[in-house]
Amino acid sequence: MQSYATDVHSTVDTVLYGRVTYQMMAGFWPNLPESLLESKYHVEQARWLEKATKIVFSQSLEMVEWKNSRLIKENIPEDISTLKQQPGNDIIIIGSGRVSHYLMQKGLIDEYRINVNPVVHVLKWGIYEDLVFYGMVKSDI
Image (tube, rainbow, N blue to C red):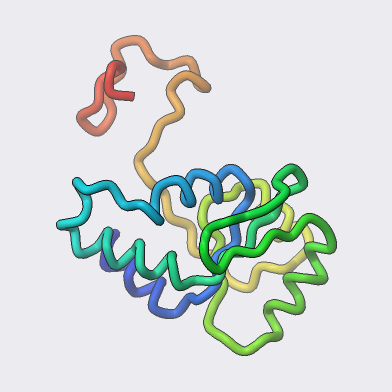
């Protein structure tokens, strides 16, 4: 997965996020935990994200502070169409299910690459009794 991600990131210079994913990513990647500083992949990922243009779609955020971030609150189809016409590399959506769904409905996604990560939303599904998933037990989740 790391090799695939590195290959994809080499062609991308803009990332689209919804509010929830943006806040999660902005809370983690700019200040990579010390335990991951020895990981070449994680350090390269953090550098790539720092350089990338980040477009955040949110009605509730008032500002975005992560380097190279821009907030879009309205006129999303027009802004995306303009962004797609500008010179540069590819644009990618990370997470952000509602943003993806909205852009699908508007016909603004040119290519789909769907990655599935082994994560279970245990409490949401109510299946937490005696759960063992990829070596995790209930207390780890």
